[in-house]
Length: 505
Image 1 (cartoon, rainbow, N blue to C red):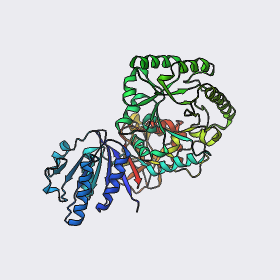
Image 2: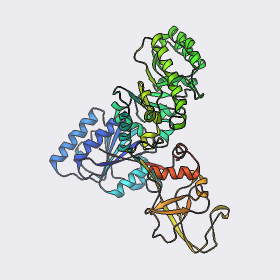
Image 3: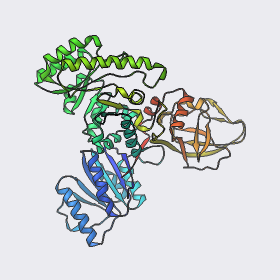
C-alpha cells in the first residue's frame, strides 16, 4: 500500500525524510527511496523503538548491517531505542544516544548527508526535526511531488515522438519551490535528460545536493571554468567571446570532448549567436572539434503563451529550422539535440518539439496557456494566526495609520509578511487570504514579518491555519490584484518560508 512521506531541507545541506510508520516493514521502502534520490551519504535515525521480537530484530539487524558494510548507509543513530544492537558495540557506525535533550543539538550537526528519521512519537519527531532543519509549524510552502511527476508526464504526452528528451528548468531554486525537486527528478531519472540553471552557483548547489543529472548553465560565467569542470557542469556558448575564452582554456589544459551547448537568437534579442554568425561559428567549431562535444543547439520562444503573437513565434521556429538544416549539413553528428519549445511552446507549438523540450513553471501545475484542464496544481502556501485583538471603532491598524476599522472589530495578526515574499501592493489593493474557506481581508500595511486580517464575525483562534494560495485560481487572483506576474510571485517566496514536500511511494 502506498503511503505519504514528508521531506524537507535541513540546516546543513541535508535532505531529511520522515517516516512515522509504526511498522519496521516500511523501513526498507523508505531507505530505498532515500538512497535513490542522491549520491550523498545516508544516515538513519531510529527513535522510540524497542524491538523485543527476535525474528523481526534479526531481520532488521541483518538488513542494516548489510547496508553499513557496503557503505550504502553511513551511520545508524538510535535515540531512545533498542533493536538488539547493544551487543554489537564493535560496529562503530552504530551510535546509541541517551543524552538529555539539550545535548542532542550538538550531536546532530550532520553535514552534507541525507537523513531518514523513523520515529514513533510525534513529539520526538518534531524535536529531532527542529535540531536538523527548519521547524515546520508556522509558514509553509507545501509541495505535492507526485503532482509534479504527473505534470511532467502530461507535457510529455503532448509530444508525438516518444524519443523527444526533456530538460527541466531548475533556475532560481526551481522557481522558488526548492532544490529537493531535483532529488525527486533523479529518483525518476529515466524521464529527465537535463536540468537547466541560470548560473554556475545554482549548478553547484544541485551537485552538493547529490544530484548527478547533467546540468546546463544558461548564462555561463567562463571566469569560473575550473569550477564548471570540477562540478561537471555544461556551459552554454552564446557569442564569440565566450567561445574564444573556452577554446583557450581547453587548449591550455589539454581537455578534449568537453560538453557544450550553443544558443542562437531567433528574435528575442537577449542572448545568442545571430543567424549571420553561423558560417564563422561552424568554421571555428570544425577547426577545434577535438575540444568540443556539442550536446545541443537551441533557441528560445519569446511569446509562446500569447495567442496574438503566433506569427512571430512561427517566424522564430522557421529561422531555427534553417539553423538546424545548416548544422546537419556541416556537422556530421546525429547526437546533437535541437530544441526551442519552452513550457507554453510545448502546448501551442507541439510541431516544434524537435529533439528536446524544456519545461519550467508548468511542472508545478501553472498553465499560462489556460488549455490543460487535467494539470495538477502542486502547491499551497499556508501560515498561522499569531494573535487576535478586539479593536474599537475608528482605531488604526498597522504602520502609518493606513488601516482603520469603521466598527468594533476582531483583528488577527498572521505570521507572514513582505520578508517572506508577499508584495505590499497586494495589501493596498483589497487583497485577502482564507481561513476555514472564508475570505478575510487584509487591513493596514503588510509588514516585513506579519500581516493583519479583519476576522470580525469569524470563529477562529490562535494557531489556526491561514491559506494564502492553494490553487491556480487563488495564485492568479494575487497576481491580478497586485499586477505582478505569477513568475515573480513564486520565485520571490523567501528562504525563511519552510518548504514541506509530500510524496506517496
